[in-house]
Image (tube, rainbow, N blue to C red; front, side):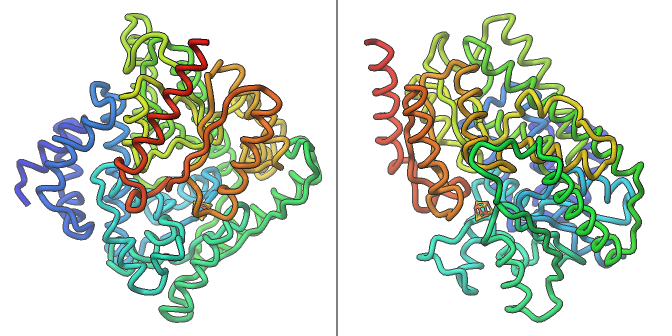
Length: 473
Ligand code: SF4
């Protein structure tokens, strides 16, 4: 790999000269591990990123830079393991607070990340190149035709291709995703007992229709206990004690980041013309939700930079789409397939917030409990994915109305047993109660082998036409 191209690439992603010097050895190590070539770096900076993202902003460049840092760090886990660093991964929802508390306690002696998410994002969001990982998983048993989740396939394929080491322990959350924990068990059984140690925490979906999950003290207590038990098990495995002060700092940091994410969503939704595209906005919102080992402080810097640039653009009346363009809310903007947002904008309609990652007013407030596991449990139950469907629908209606959208787009998870049906039901109920038109798109959030731009273009064009026609009436 030509070193000049690496330097050029890092400069493009807003790395300073000093940061390039510091980062370069790991970057050069990771490039072949991740299967990247000089052409991939060129394609990323000359075509993929400028075509799909608002790269005129330093904040967006830094967002990409933080994603790259995390991906490179994941590729380095094999070396970390040799150095005796303990490796802790997570799957959805990988509650950030617990992982950052473990990191606070263990420092450089521990690696924490939602590894398959960041590996997929690094490869797909930056280079459009996750397919080799998926194909590897398919070769080894996660068959293509069964429409398994690409995130879970990335975990298998990334591991088997040597892009990520086996963890000392993976926290396999059984809160939302049913295929995720099964995948950990699958890896463990397929490649050898003890190969992929995992700890499972569970939360039953047993609150009644419309009950407020985050206000039910017994539920918060139950979840706090699950979090504590899971974390203690992990502490024992890795030999690192997490003290209350580590948890307290993690709670406060998560709170601050949620506030920043909420502020950015409000800014973008209020701006006219809209100052930022939804494929970057939703990725920015991961700042308060997902753990990172190396990228988090850079990610927060990216959000701060974007907030400053977004305010300036709003003041100057500069946007990424024409003034008064129709706006759509979304259940979850597919940021790993960023051209979807671009095609909407090419058709004069802007996607905006994602209900699932938009902090509501409660999430931007401090938790009511001081005890850090209770505070973490409450914070998480305030998130839509922690709630029963009716309670989540109430917050979706609130977000759709307060942001004054012209329609909602649901979908992109037709392979998913939970989110596929869930969104269809939510769409039907919300449309009936609010009159806001809802559109459902069969597609895949994580990859685009089955849904090419050609395949989705016609669908997106017709959604945009219907929205415009409704507004003209
Ligand atoms: S997309 Fe669905 S199957 Fe994949 S990790 Fe998320 S919840 Fe699990």
